[in-house]
Image (cartoon, rainbow, N blue to C red; front, side, top):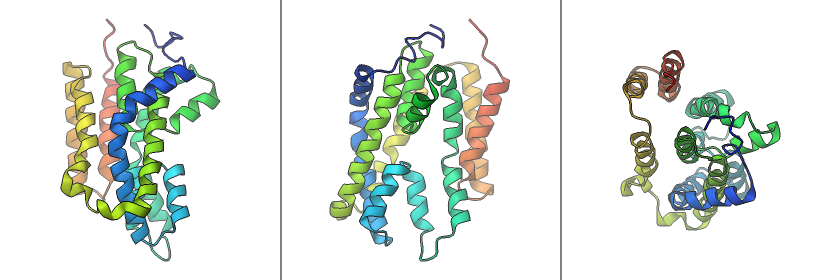
Length: 236
């Protein structure tokens, strides 16, 4: 199938619901992190309404935790904005990789789908798209599952957060990383992809060691993305 095949970008209630159900098992782990965020935000002094609104509108766990680190009586807007941008810079490349399929949708649907794109539903959808399988329902429905469970976890954290104060001590911080690693291992395997991942990883590590905090996200993504764009895949 080509990326212009109408079946690849079909978006209806049936495939959205199927995508939602497919991401529910992973979403249960998102609840744990949402719970931890709700507790941390309460301890940082935010009121309950602000916490729920933040999780609903921002929907970015890592940057929300980073924002709490910079939260004070007088919020430093510029450092906060730069930090959040650095952490979420990977979404620029997510959007670029999804564009061949998203461009087939009307602008309203296209940007609605992108509102709930996260690491998990992006990785699974890209695997399906590259196999020539329809995955727009997985992308949007799976994103809705992750988003709704993140809000649920945040709400639970406001009232029951003391039950899990340190998810890192339980190894729960590794769940999403292991999932994404499994997506990479199960994806396309050739010399080109291997070199791209090596360049991205080495660049990210160097930036982590020698550049300002969170810059490794941008550097690693740009290094791998630029190399992938220059080193075009041979058409079979």
